[in-house]
Amino acid sequence: MEVGMQGGRLVEPDSEIVSPTLSADEVSHLAVDIGGSLIKLVYSSINHNSGIDDKEKKYSKECSVVPNGSSNYPVICGRLHFAKFETNKINDCVEFILSKQLHHGGSWHHETSGNDKKAIKATGGGAYKFADLFKEKLGVSLDKVDEMDCLVAGSNFLLKEVHPEAFTYIDGREEYVQIDINDLYPYLLVNIGSGVSMIKVDGDGKFERVSGTSVGGGTFWGLGKLLTKCKSFDELLELSHKGNNRVIDMLVGDIYGGTDYTKIGLSSTNIASSFGKAISENKELEDYGPEDISRSLLRMISNNIGQISYLNALRFGLKRIFFGGFFIRGHAYTMDTISVAVNFWSKGEAKAMFLRHEGFLGALGAFRSYESHGFDANMTH
Ligand SMILES: Nc1ncnc2c1ncn2[C@@H]1O[C@H](COP(=O)(O)OP(=O)(O)O)[C@@H](O)[C@H]1O
Ligand SMILES: CC(C)(COP(=O)(O)O)[C@@H](O)C(=O)NCCC(=O)O
Image (cartoon, rainbow, N blue to C red; front, side):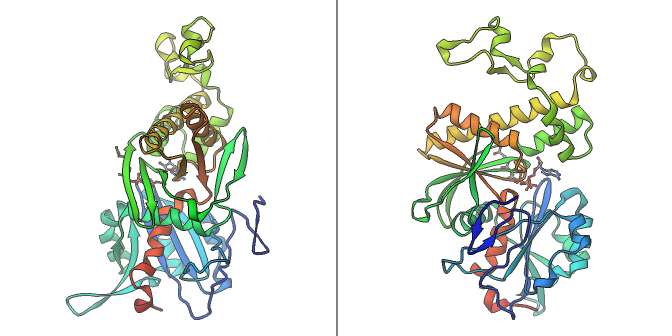
């Protein structure tokens, strides 16, 4: 998919891009974000040929980051690689790191015992949970970086340095948003991972987590798995394409005999109660099509997140809301539902914007922390 031009290079979302600041003697670095559902890796390489081999393609999805050549934003190394694994398949991730020797891409930590230990930047809850496993299997320590700090650092980096990164999704069309870096703040960052964090961002390192909800990506995948017997997240998403939410959702028209409830601004086709039809019909779970269940679930969760996001934007007078996290998955119906919810509740005042590198904000933030934590002094081979 062609999405734009950057410095004369074609920018594609699923390819790698070489940073203009690449220099031959720079080394690879690895940062990990171990979340409730997925492990995200960002690593850099110095060698153009050290890119993706067949094995890596099998394991991971590649994305691209294009640092903005026109600014002096520091970039550690030239080529950034992105990969993700399910957290419950952490052994695949460890095997991948071993096979690529990525664990050498960290920095040296001086320990009180006098021993120097290799440490890689790590964020997300798994940086705590799996610290021993990384030590045991890879011989590296995890140098923990706060998850919220990383999300904000990753988001600011992408919004300021990567073009095109943010886009709106309206009436089935993606439109890239020109970011004015002098007028970026404040904004609301909504990260939809397993759960959802809503963060008011006021600048680099300046933010407050103002809200959150446990009804997030983990809820969609968890409930969806139970209700549809789907074996993978992508299968569940795919299923939702074919579904019709009206089969299960109770609409305003179902309650009001087919008419709108204009006095309170509801049309007959608005959902009055997600999954509400299931209470009055004499049907078992098996009587519903899994595609309709998936569709209703996706709509319920996306709409709810869109609504809570808008209410938080309203609390702080924020006009811009950026959505990240792997729940979105660049999925049309998800983005459409979130956009419609934000538009509906804000009466057209606020806009939902999505990030091309949606799920990698935390990992990118952790990667960038090599620089802010004195990476140069600790550079390693
Ligand atoms: N291959 C996948 N496996 C599992 N969940 C996926 C997958 N792709 C997208 N998702 C969705 O993304 C969510 C995780 O998003 P992510 O931003 O990685 O959060 P976390 O840091 O909590 O793992 C899952 O809960 C699920 O909704
Ligand atoms: C605890 C978390 C920050 C962990 O991040 P995640 O792995 O979900 O990306 C997130 O799940 C969350 O913000 N949950 C919502 C909790 C709440 O505010 O109710």
